[in-house]
Image (cartoon, rainbow, N blue to C red; front, side, top):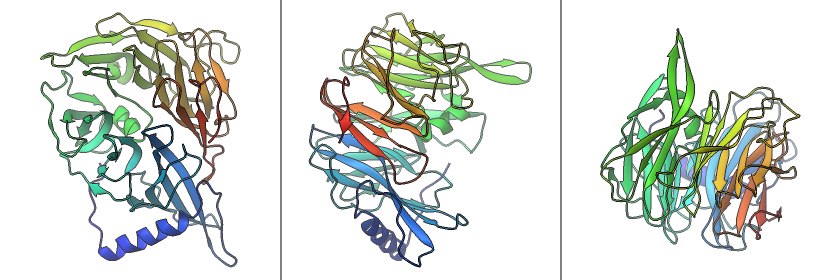
Length: 404
């Protein structure tokens, strides 16, 4: 796992200057000056909103050679918005810089308090001024997944080596917006998870941890079974801890025949949603959705996997990959993913609607989130090229979407 890297003051100034230069536009395509061998592109990677108007965007600036040969340099930074994402202000302090090949240290941002932001990926950083400045939070491991509600924040961390078959994980908790952390008590009954799941989660493609309304949390990851010399996932292990409880409750959910990816979500009404997907292939992936009305309630399959690609009715769309899940209730659910448009259901999974303008099969949709029952945002990549993301907004609970 990538550790914290100390940078010289000179490097910090240079990266901050680069971020300021590339922040002149919000979602601009790549541009290069005459005679230049390099081009700059700006991509909106993630958004977090605290009200219908106030939010912060996580941006990535990419500097790459026009010849196509050579390394690509990336800078991560944030910019605030006061008009619901229509425009974003000046760049804040640089979060990280990388060669773009090793993955981003920060994949997402989340509010943990009125003006407190947490940026997380394999690392964790905190801002107390809406992303204007950042400071690292030093933990005893790399962040696998994180969830925040109000001032309470939970995180899964690991010190797993790269490409290990299984990784030891531990659960930590903060009750002061992510400033101070301590080990959770009790720890989850399963203290190791598949190494592949850890790596997928750290790229923002698996949601393993979700907080329940009124306290408590739920963890979910594929359970592995060995068959001869092959290890493959068969079901999803779900572990729940009620607020103030001394013991975890474990159950097994047969979401699909062989879940390769899992996405966990808890709706404001307490409904629990678990989306599973098989190994992706050629722009398509079998997907299924399981639902539980609340803590202690049995799980049921709400949408079965469409095994007949392209002609199945009633199941989750087979086109595109599973990458994110958000639920407003047990009936209103949305998902995003690579090579997938934003998709949603308003009847608990019996029928699914697709918004092809938000993502499309050329690249995909990156994120969907809401701050209440009506106001939400969706982020699309557009095409598989830097600098082409687009932000969409709804004010009617996801029925209609418009460009922000």
